[in-house]
Image (cartoon, rainbow, N blue to C red; front, side, top):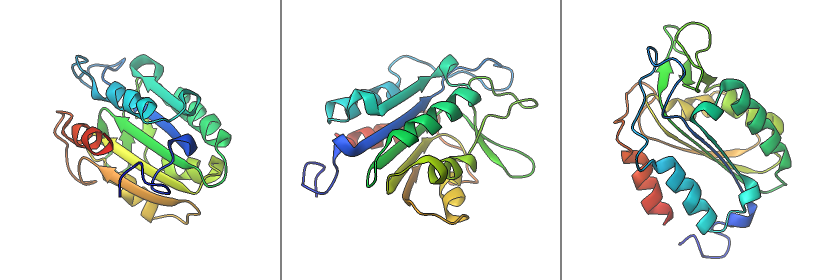
Length: 188
């Protein structure tokens, strides 16, 4: 079934939340990635080309992707969706794991002491609390990205989830856009 088959995917009922962090305020904690030909921006462009309304896409990039801003924008974006809508949530950057096993996606201001970043466990909690839609596709291109599936699996849920990740929760990722390139090819 292609994305253009009726009932397969309706871009007009899709709410995209994209966080692309390739540089950080604390480079001693998280090394930057090259920005040339960044694939998170290509994903946003492809979603627009496929018909997702610009008003239904939030794209937070680098210094705009602080932990507070991510959470605030996510909550307000989710609240605008309607019943039966689809959420497509994507993150690329660094994923990190604490000694206690909690996984974080490194937001712009993340460091190893004061602000570990955007906690993966908070993602399904926020979706369940604020999203009126029925389906969520969670995508991550970073180390420990498989923890998204664990976060969804370990909680009661109203929303139907699918998770695609570049690595298992216990593994590192490539750092080479391998996952996102595959995602782009599949959506194209």
